[in-house]
Image 1 (cartoon, one colour):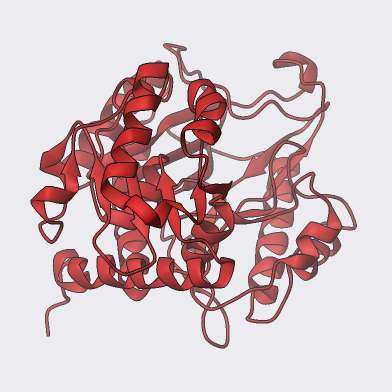
Image 2: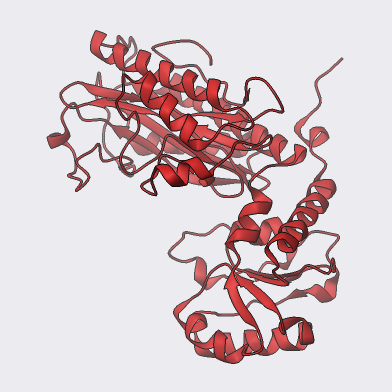
Length: 408
C-alpha cells in the first residue's frame, strides 16, 4: 500500500480546531479571559492565519495581531495579509493591522478592542508582548482590564503537540534533511558559504517548504577558542552568521538550519568536514563518540514523568561529569511554531527550573549537545524527537552523521 502524502497525513481544519480547544482550556486553568497576541507563533496558533515572513528587525512594519476570547467565539485577526486568513474565520473578524510602535496606533487598537469586545475587557486580559508605546498607554486606555502576561496560557497550550502538529514538524524535518543531502553532495573546497545557502534555499522550496525559519549556518569551527570571536562566557562562539567565506580543504563545519512547513519549524544540526575524502582526526572522533553517548542518555531519560533535572544529570554523567552543551545554549529545547520554545533544559535559569519541567507525551525535543575542547575542536549535532506515551521517544531526524557514522 503506498505511503500517505504529507497533505493526507495532516488534517489542517482539525489541527486549528484542536489548537483553539487547547488554548481555551489553558485560559480556563490560568483564569485569563482575553488574549491580545502579537507574536507570529501565537497568532498562528490562535487563528490558523499565515503571516508574511519578514526579517525580525522589520517585522514591526507589517504587524499581525490576534484577539482570542475563552467564550469559544471566533478570534479576531488584524493583518496586512488577509489572504493568509484561514477559510473558517468569518470575514467580519478579519481587520486591517495596527501600528503599535506609535501612539496613534495604540490608541486606535484600544478603541477597536473596546468596540469589538465591550464588557469582555472588564476582566483579566493576557498580553504576550508590548512595544514602548503600548506599554506606556495600554494600562491607561484599557483601565477596566487587568493586564497580565499571556505566557502561562499560550505556553501551556503549545507545550504538547497534537497529532497533526507532530506531522507538520515531521514534514519540516524531512524536507530539511532531504535538502541537506543535496548540499552535502555539492560541498567541496573552493565553494563559498553563501553558495551552500543558495543550494539549500532553492531545494527546500522545490520540496514543499512554506518558508525558511533560520538563515543557514555553515560555521567553520576553530581548533582554538582564541582563533574565533571572543565570548565573555569563554565558550565556543556559535553560531556565526554565513558570509561569502571560501571553504577550504579540511574545514570543520558546524551546520545549522531550520525551515517551515505550515508554520512549524525544523531544526537541523550536523558537523561536517569540507573535503571530497573527509577523514576525521582520532581526537575529533572521540568527541563524536561522547556526543553519541550523551544523546543516547538524553533519549533514554526522555520518558513521561521524568524531569528536566533528570535529563540534565543524565547528560552530564554520560559526558564524564562534564557539562556537554555550550554556555549560551541548553542540552535540549522544544520546537513548534517557534524555532526554540519550551521546554528548555540546561539554561542559566538553573537546576530548580530544570526540575520543574516534567516530560509529557507530545513534547517535541531538540537534543543538541556540543562536545568541544580547546585545542582539538568539537562535534555538535541536533536530533529532534517526540516524547511518546511509553517507551523511547519517536525520532524525527533521519540525516546521517557523515563522515562519523550512519543514520540515527
